[in-house]
Length: 282
Ligand SMILES: N[C@@H](CCC[C@H](N)C(=O)O)C(=O)O
Image (cartoon, rainbow, N blue to C red; front, side, top):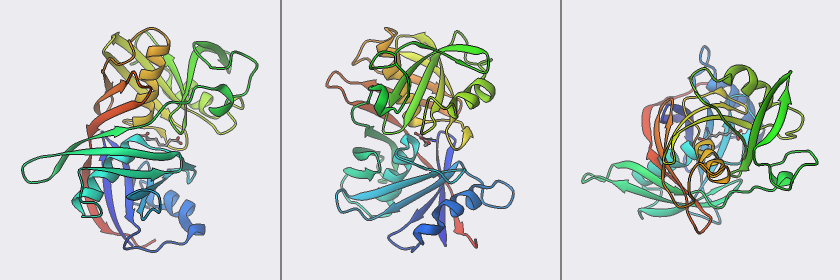
């Protein structure tokens, strides 16, 4: 099976082009686990499939490192956009990608040799209703700065779905934040029936955040595009940023620019890069 390994700010996935390769549906979860293994596989945060779509120009499916399938992946969308444009799967600089969470519109920004340097994704409208996150509980309809205790520790979370679920915690300093302990525990807490991605966010100013993440199904990663979008939506909901104001989010792997536009849609701009191509025997 031919593969391409790509990353968006260090969030790396194995990409398989289903316009050329045929994979069995039943094998996909195991394939994601095996390919992602850093000792016996290629090593990645998961597997992303790029294939034909009946509703958009291409279709993306994403499987986390543990084999679970997610409905959306921001860093993956930028890589799929770069791959699709540079491999001639699409010819326009603006096109649509189908995900399990819906159809998104992407714009590639190219240089004079038609290489994609950055990608802007219109991530659509965030979902804030508690039952749509989904999150259990009797509190208000949307979850904004709500107290939650896990393993004897208390935090205040804002819940946002970008097609996939996120719990955002604002902290005074992101460096010592308990990503691998509290973040990990919250990601599988029973109040989130589908699990949740957990983002720790430090507000440096209304237009600049620092960010660390524990991803559902993949653990601590260098970046999470949907998580950065959720962080800015949560920032607006908590009064840290004005809606319409672009925010530079510093992730461990680099920076993304995120805007929750006044029309309600969230826009993400950032890079995408190749690591290598090869043939997997798994
Ligand atoms: N890294 C991704 C998100 C991948 C899926 C996530 N772990 C989930 O299970 O929802 C991103 O860049 O958005």
